[in-house]
Image 1 (tube, one colour):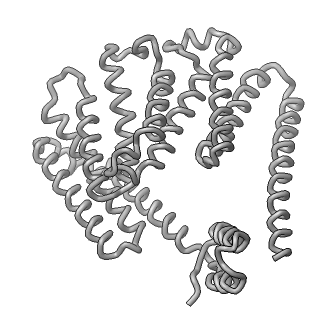
Image 2 (tube, helix red, strand yellow):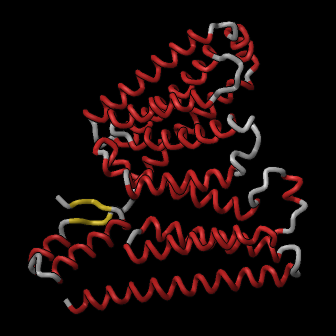
Image 3 (cartoon, rainbow, N blue to C red):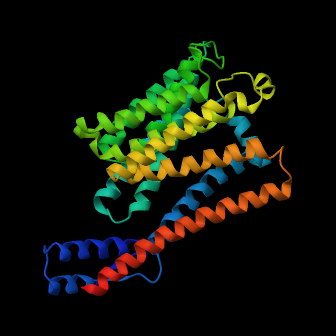
Length: 355
């Protein structure tokens, strides 16, 4: 029976077999057998399953939101409004425990049902978030100290992610970590936009840098969370690059009126810093063969360059010239990308023809 693979997996397997054969790790006969042991699927059912479960979860959220526009449901909710928060809190805690149990049980019994299991985990995460929200109402003292609740969610999600070995829960934990950081710093700055002289984009630039550094340097030192290293790395880079991009647009301003009155070239240095960081990651990725650093570095470098393009030329250049320059730039990028792809493609083709 042949192994069924996706088209994007075919190239990786073919490259591996060719590499082993070239380095005499396997003989030609074994290589031929391996090449005939798999076939490309005619239809990507895995992707269909993934998208179907995403749509299902989205529909659940939409169904929940739709409740609030149904008059009969609103009338029912108005009667339930006086239900003590502690009861709803306990109910959501039990519901989340049920979803986690079902997700864990299904994962052990049916490990191949990846998206079904993850969907149950996601429902558990949503129930946990609702539980924490109502717990906040129960213990609310009116001091606006909401960051404690996000800190509690971080602890809960971390424990659950380790116990259930769930990357989904770990991803939610890192999102909660970012929200906790935002609320904690906002609380200590009296809910102002600046904390230690930093607005939110600059704060999250520091936060993203620390998370990325932790993922690269310290993450693998703890065996319990070692499996989440790549996910932490990706989300850390996302925090860093998105924050740098926002910083290149808004600078370190906390007042939108002051920012609007400032010429964009006065904060050009933030754009330069952002681009240099992107270049550094792209260079590091190319040198260390780090695909994540390389792809994110190149992608956000392009985003930065096109952001500057719109900032400085949209109001200062004729629209026809503007779009002509935009078309030319994309054509040049496409031509260069095509050249790189064609070179690697024909190089592989020539190599296989020599075997």
